[in-house]
Length: 127
Image (cartoon, rainbow, N blue to C red):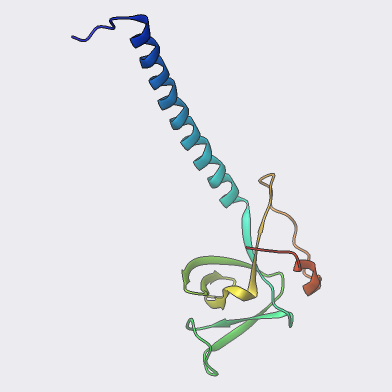
């Protein structure tokens, strides 16, 4: 059985344990913050012409346009392929990621969406 031989060994052991505890707490708090931020974000339709094209496949073809959603429509994203987002609601299909905006709230509450805003409302926005 190992016994602590001196106060120096005890100090080293204590320092090592406090470093381990600090690392574990940092990992836990970081992952909790990321989960909270992820839960307070939403994806909305936003394109220069006022409508976002929903397509049946993740590519632009003249015959795969299924519907058009007005700007401000909240999208339920279920997947991603390259620059395309697969959505489930309000209409299943694919939208170009460049025609969407991700809006996050700092305090965990979702913000109200204003469906009557102009394209310049997002001039400074970055993903």
